[in-house]
Image (cartoon, rainbow, N blue to C red; front, side):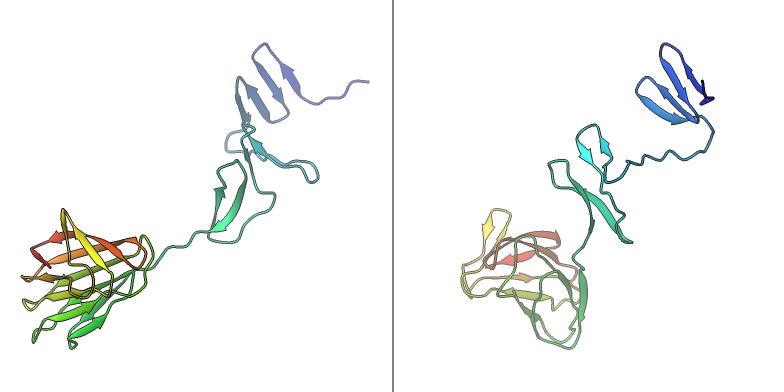
Length: 191
């Protein structure tokens, strides 16, 4: 006994109920209909035999990531916050990674000291808001590369601003030892 299951078949097209299988495309026959791929039981949905989709939904804000071998999962994507500090009434500041500093003391130059520990990729920025500007001191064994110049290694090395608007961006290269600096604006003294 035959059943009515709405299967139509031609040489390059197969229609099964509300799905259209044409060449390499699966689509819905009805406009604006959802296409749901649902495995039976504990089966998984695989795309191109390369990526296997997670079998359960993630939580709000998560994204699907791959491990580089085709296995996907939901993970929370974290970003490192960057905080700007407006230094107006201080003359010395112990810097923290992933922070920016506005040297805004109209009475004297602000002396910043690099953190003693930092990781590759950590960032620090300093902008001179007043003509007194800033100086960035190093700790023991630390140094900073600016273009083809290198500061004196250790506590004797520093960067210093010379004008209002001077701006330097430091990116950590070697943990707790080396920053590479780009002068975003102005002139920086390198010692």
